[in-house]
Image (tube, rainbow, N blue to C red; front, side, top):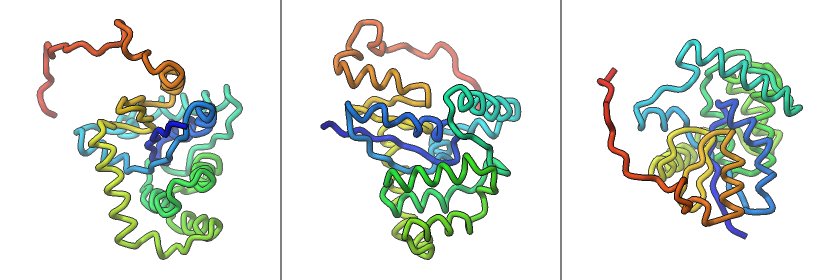
Length: 208
């Protein structure tokens, strides 16, 4: 069975929503869960996250809550957002993107309404998963997470969640249907309407 990569940061509610539906790809591919630092992606591409734009922040929370309601997915925003996701990301890194561990991380952040920025909560989950919380601070763990983020950038990943299929980026929780279609038909992206033409930029904004 072919293998594809899913890049995520649990700070993203869209990543949580997408994770709940990743199982639908199981008949077509084995999905490798790869934690990355969203802030690192934003810094590389000189971008800002939705939580950094006041009206977009409000829209994101409301829209994600509505989507969860429509799909019957438990959802409750953490007590504060954005928060420092590093303890959670390092836990996902230590567990090598284990599906059960990643699911528990998302549940602790996006279904409890608790303070996700409290590292002691990540440490408690680590113990639940059989991981010594002290390992989350190991330089090797930090370096692995940094390397994963750099790897994502090298493959053109600019946000989370992102599926990478044969070098092609499928970004966002709403890209799963497109990704599934491409897995079912590997020639789909070669159709005339989906080929990426060389379109020159007609205008460029001044740097902020």
